[in-house]
Image (cartoon, rainbow, N blue to C red; front, side):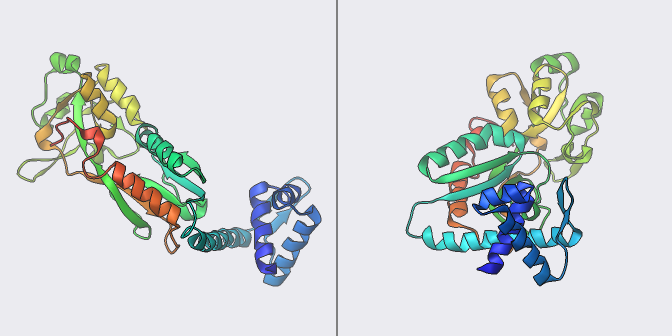
Length: 306
């Protein structure tokens, strides 16, 4: 018990920012927290924290130890929950990361439905298009779209994402409709800046040939909704996922083009930290999302995507 109490004291100090705040968090005196950190450092034979009158910070050794300590405590929580969840309602917290546009447009409603079904679940959601490090940042799960680059992560496919190229009717009436990707060099493109130029503008010809188009980029943005709005205003041609563009196509503010040249669909995945027990609450949440999305997601209803 003493060793786990010392580890718990260290993580509380790092996360709370001070000995006194850590003591309040753990329900013990500040002096007890300080004593536990000191005995942990003596047992390990190294200093874990830099202490000054103004702030605390981890040493390099402390940073490595803290990451392992967080993992140990999380695994202990998971082990206990794996037993209790077999006979009780789902409970506990889920720390989840997801891309911003997909999270706002399609994950938020799913989360609301899940939490209504499981009132003892708490959720911490981070909507961000940056690449999250699940282990270092303590996430239980992330939703990712496209090819998975980190082969060490445990992944479960939740559904399918298709992309489409489109422009407004006003743009096409003014500049003409490109009939194949090679004609895009004569047109204005709207670039999603979180992927490369070649990633966004490559196409698959019906006979299997890959074509790298070269539109003239007028707007770059790290948000697909912003590009969709610009395209619907007649500012250029955009290409992106139907979970963003489908609404604009259905309402008629955008028109799909180059449908014969779309590339293969990609997956939506739930990814989990490697080497860890996946708690039942995470598994049930993943099942919930897979049932909601699947290979024929609702946002593609009524759309021509190939």
